[in-house]
Image (cartoon, rainbow, N blue to C red; front, side):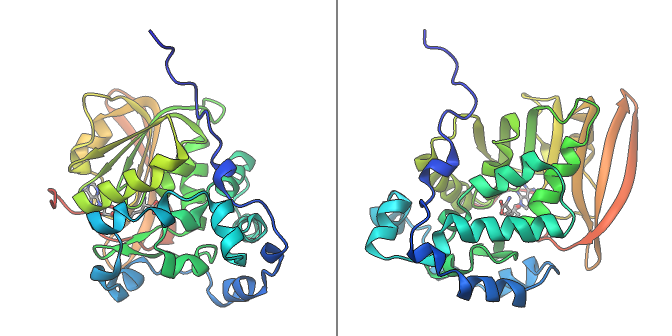
Length: 295
Ligand code: SAH
């Protein structure tokens, strides 16, 4: 039998564009980056979205040039500063300035080509630190909050090691890709079939061996795979579902946006079989956590 796949055999950065001369013309994106600041705009951005334009149809998916193409090859045809490593680096520098200190998380953020998770028309904005529409009134999360939440998960009593992590709300797969660089196994659940498929399409060319995508209601978790030493919710409910608390390993951490119009990040640590500690952290803004599935 073959060996189990090693952690992340192909580095995500290997599909990112190598710095090119064109890539150094980063000004337009940089200045846009300073224009758009931190407040998360997930719901606002999602509501601005016109679902019909997102390429999640079979026809769009089978159109190969965009998602299958090697980014370097694309950049040769159409040099563009938006896909350059330099621009992504600048984004990571901004995220670090906002307070994310965990170098492993920052390195993961730098390695994941966020633009490849977005539809072509929005790629020029990929390295602005903002959430952006991905279809179905949902958004790709803001890089700062992705980094912040993963940093919090890693701040555990295990020296930052994460064995099995569960993400609720795969969306386009971006956060799962970042998580895959800091955790041994990543499980991610999405309730909207079209987005589950989109994430598969986005992640496939990156050949990430340690992500398992599930279509279903993430509020139920994945009891067959539990316990998890990290759980991360990418959508906000009024409270964290009990099923997810039950699926935390002892010593595990869960991070979730909680609330409605006003949302806060909530950190929950499981200290024993029957005890959980909860800490309220910063304000945030996510799309809502909803029950059930949409096919
Ligand atoms: N993780 C994504 C963010 C996606 S937005 C990223 O990397 O950018 C949040 C996602 O949560 C949406 O796609 C939404 O459909 C999904 N979601 C909301 N409620 C859910 C539930 N109960 N189970 C699974 N996914 C859910």
